[in-house]
View 1: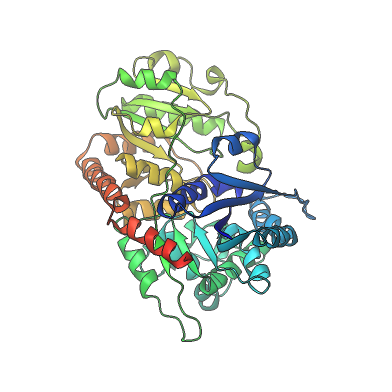
View 2 (view 1 turned 180 degrees about the vertical axis):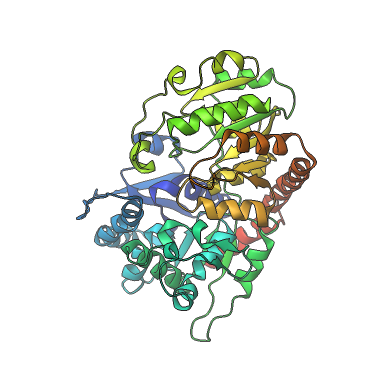
Length: 461
C-alpha cells in the first residue's frame, strides 16, 4: 500500500497547513498528501492538483453564536461533531493506503482524544502561530493551577518561561474567562499536545530563540515525556496571484522604502470615528501611505459579524472633508482587499501598520519590513508584545487611557514618524532586515527549518 500523510486543517489556518503539505511533498515525494476538511471549493481543488481533498459533511451547532468567545468555541465544536465522520473517512483511507501520520490543527484538538484510542496512527499537532504563543499555550495548565480566578478580573503580569511578560489585560480573551466553555477547550488542548507524536510550529529558531529554547528544555514527569517540536517555518504563502493591481503600479512611482502600508487583515474592521482619526494622523505625519480600508463597523457590532459584510467603503463619507484631495500625491487607498505579499515585497514599502496576526508578522519579516503593531482582537495584543519585546521587529501604538480600543491621531502621527523617520525606527529596520536574511538561511538546505522538516519526515517513516 502507498504511504499517505493526512492533514486536518481548520478554515482559518488552511493556507499555512497547505504550505506545510507542499513542504512534506518536497521532502518526501513518494508520499501522498490528503486534506480532510469541510466543503473544499472547486477553485481550491483545481488550484492544488498535488493534494487529494476529501470533504466532511456540514454540521449544525446546537448553540447560537452570540459573542466572539462563542465563535472561538465553535472552531473546536465543529470538529467535535465531525469526529465520527472523520473516523470513518480514515478507516476507509486505511484500506488502500498506509497512513503514516495525521496532522491536526490545534482547533481540531477534539479529534485527538477521539481517535487516539481508536486508530493506530501517529497524531501531530500543527501550531500555525509562533513559539512564544505555543510556549504560552503549553504553559496554560500550569497557569490554571497557579492563578485563582479569571484573568479578565485581574490586573497581573503573566510570566511564562522564554516569553516576554504579558499584562493580563493583553492575554487572549479565550484564555481570560474561566466561566466560558472555550477556556476549557484551550486548557484541554494544552494538555493533549504533550501526548501527541509531535508539535509542528510555524516559526524558525533565530526568530524566537528564547521561546524555542524554553519549549525544548521544558521538563515533564518521566511518565509524560515531552513531544518533539518541529520549527519548520516560516510557512508563508507561495504562488500568490500576480494579477495586475493599480496599487502596485502606484508603488512603482514611489521612492525606495518611503511608503507606509496599513492593513488589518480579513476581519480587521474599525469604527468610523477611528478611521477619521487615522486619516488625520496620516495627513499630519507627512508620510506616503498605501491604506487598505474596509467599510467601518457599526456601533456595537462585533468584529466577526462585521467581517461577514463585504460592502465596499464609501470613502467620501468616512474621511475628513478634503482628505482625499489633500493627500492625493502621496497616498493611495485600496478598498477592502489588497495583494499583501506583493505590496510587502515591493521596494517602495518601508513600514507596515498591522493587526499583529502571526501570518502577517511572518510575511513582513520575510520581506524585511518593520512593523507598527495595532492589535484588534483574539491573540493579537499578546502577539504585539512578542513583536516588540521578543522579535524586536516593530513598535506599538498606545491606546487612549479612557478607551482601550481607540488610538488618537496624535499618537498615530508620532508612532508613524518614529517608525519611518527616527533612529529607533532605523534600529528596528536593521533588525528585521537581518531576520529576513535569517529566514532564507533557515529554509535553505542545512538551515534549522530545513533540518526540522527532515526530522519531521523521518519520524513518519
